[in-house]
Every structure is written in C-alpha cells, then in structure tokens.
Length: 81
Image 1 (cartoon, rainbow, N blue to C red):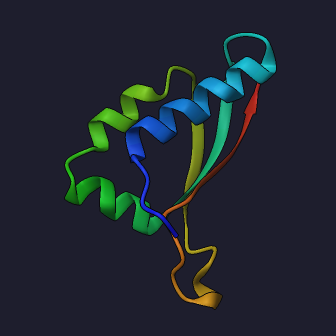
Image 2 (image 1 turned 60 degrees about the vertical axis):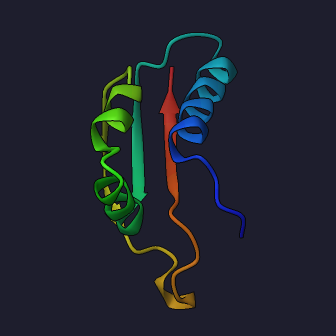
C-alpha cells in the first residue's frame, strides 16, 4: 500500500461525499481505525482533521482489519443529506 496525505485525502473524501449528495451534509456516522487516530495524534493532526468536519458526526474507533493483521489507517462512514 502506498502512503497518502491524510489531510488532503480526508478533505477530498468529505468534499466528494457532499458533492454526491448535491449539497451540504446534515450529518455522518464515521468509523475510524484506532491506528489512524494514533497517527493523527503522533503527527499532531487531530485538530486539523476535526476542522474538516463541517457537519455533525457520530461514530467510534474500530479494529476492523485486525483479523488480517494491520493493513491501513481507514476512515469509513455514511454521510447523509
């Protein structure tokens, strides 16, 4: 797997989600890999990522791919209009 820019890719994903909805999202249910959270904290990016959330969000940290070993730092969600 190739490394990506966590901030730019997260921003782009949220922008694409809202574009798919045809306007501003009214909320989202987000599931974030616990290791993504660790990376955000280690790189001092937590505040920057939070500022990307321009709509109400709920969710929790997961270890979704742990049965395969750690693969990547994912953020999966459902964004609603």
